[in-house]
Image (cartoon, rainbow, N blue to C red; front, side, top):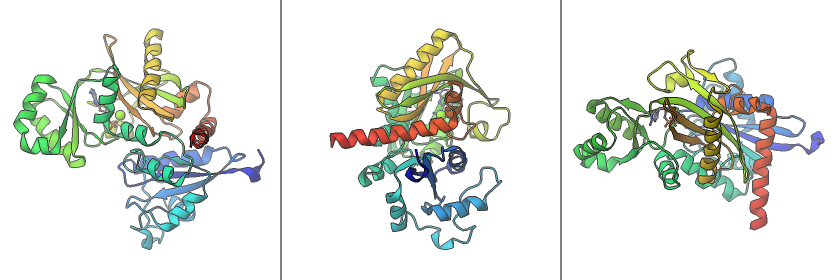
Length: 363
Ligand SMILES: Nc1ncnc2c1ncn2[C@@H]1O[C@H](COP(=O)(O)OP(=O)(O)O)[C@@H](O)[C@H]1O
Ligand SMILES: [Mg+2]
């Protein structure tokens, strides 16, 4: 395609989430790899305070943190003090309206939970990835599990604890967890990510502390039976006919795959492809596609599993905006399948556009 006919792709990243810094690395990777012959990338950063920066402001903010590892976009540091808490302004709307398609690389709240997708639907802007419902289900682990369990899919036994329940019936909650799940169990905010606010509880004391901690992040917590198993992940790509990638394994040297294991511990390794018997791999790939379809996902999704030593399989979760740095599991798995990082970005943009066109045909 001719250079002048290039599509303007908004790359939205950063934001008010705990995964702000990772999101910047993903966006930088995409901007360096996107096919310049077909696309023109407009970087759209959102600061930690929630200010949507213009592409020019974003570039200035990125230049200011060049070379720093896991830095955050701060509107203050490049003399944009007035933008500190501008939020979503008319200016942001103007920029957004100009893009031909938006690629959201914002993890967590406001990016991955359906709210951004809702805004884009209202504005009629094509975008990459899951729609409103799938995004919301991808984000809310309690609802996600309910839907997957209802579909007959294997998820760990779990209980949902809301803040009012915890406040009013603490003892009953503890008794129920102990009789139905036992220790160790995992306690996490229902809407979270990067293992933030997640604890592995080995005792009543841990459980009580863990629930208090998780309920600081969210009004709903999830308590799950701990599954002792390998961490296997599968990338899914497509709309109506999604494909599953080869599998990857995460090996870490901590109690579980916590924030430090994810982003800081040099001992954490991704093993690609995972060493699994072919029939287990096939089962996981088929399950990954089923999970993707069950929550009505689109574009991309990374489905994470636990595989126990006696071969039992559990779905841990699906992530609708998985880590997308060039070193992340999602693109790495596709690379093994012969799809480069650059071509993956192109494919995702095409899928976003296809979905938009299809919706318009219906409407
Ligand atoms: N039921 C469970 N059994 C074993 N490990 C778990 C369980 N739930 C969570 N974990 C551990 O905690 C990590 C983070 O939990 P997860 O549900 O994946 O949330 P996040 O969205 O933060 O990644 C997992 O990768 C895993 O190491
Ligand atoms: Mg996870």
